[in-house]
Length: 319
Image (cartoon, rainbow, N blue to C red; front, side, top):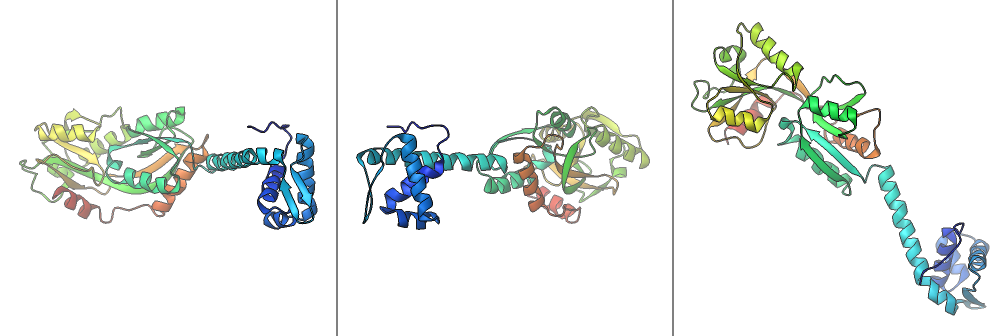
């Protein structure tokens, strides 16, 4: 059966009901609740008055449930369990431990940063539901501003105001080169090494800042880049390189498995470095996103710098 009670009934009265039923004594129940016995007695009296029922038979040796009390005690326990669950769920939503995260990411985050962030946050907030999608930085910034994404792993600068950032690491330029290419055996390259070779670069419409910095740096190095293809997806760029259509310029340390006939080689140029960051809309942050930002700060308390980048690239390409 279910208890039907007035909306003003205090859950503390039900707690007293269950405590006295379990202890069989008002004094022992008061001790368990860390309350004065008269207060427990008043709560039971108020509950009996609200229900129009006598719940306990009082005696010198204690208190026993009446027939009505025995019929209602299980339901009282259920109500208290549900109330505790409701309070815990509300706390989880308030503190960012529950809800959904629509997270975007750039390709260079897929192999290392994305799984590291998600794994760390799932330990802190296992109830969070994830919807993860690959998008270039420009698309992520637009989606964050429009409310279509909650957070993104992207590369600033961004043209949208009100975007908050947690810097994660610095990423430099690298080249995807066919192994049988004249440059394929090199441990590292300079921009000048790429003069005269067909290049595959990021589309300007996907990232004007990235595209323009690469093209401008090539011109500063003394040559006009031969742009054979534009491609914003790493896997597709690797496929174009494997097909012999050019050398692809990409940003990042590691991207996971490469085609067997393609190498990732660092390109030396101090001016071609970008920050990878976790971003969200600071004008409408949700608790779940703010908690994700806390996770990012705990995993990367100091943004990873470029030190060690070349060793990681070399190790990744020689597997």
